[in-house]
Image (cartoon, rainbow, N blue to C red):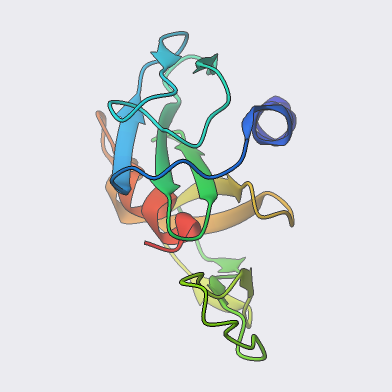
Length: 154
């Protein structure tokens, strides 16, 4: 629950207007270390931010400057590994392209059965913290860069 609230608060206060920079396809971060608000970190942030994670929780973020979207994913390698239901994020099929270079917003898709590690993701385009299947998190030193990138729409 703490992770969900922290991710929601972080994205709610840190996102600003789009600044053109290279997209970030997913970058791991260390608990308490700053994610900078420049091309080396995430140029969409208004200011550098620090996310504190619980012991052995892994985190990653991704910036999608084309859609002005920041995503964060976290997981614990000893978390649930059995069968469970996941709701994937998909591009909105009813979205009408305004021809301004933007991309479709991400919305929840149809729930599916999953096995393996469970990650939690959130993004600055609203919605909620959702679960994602994370095969890379089930080992010590796991990674959630792919889950962050997917939630950012990259």
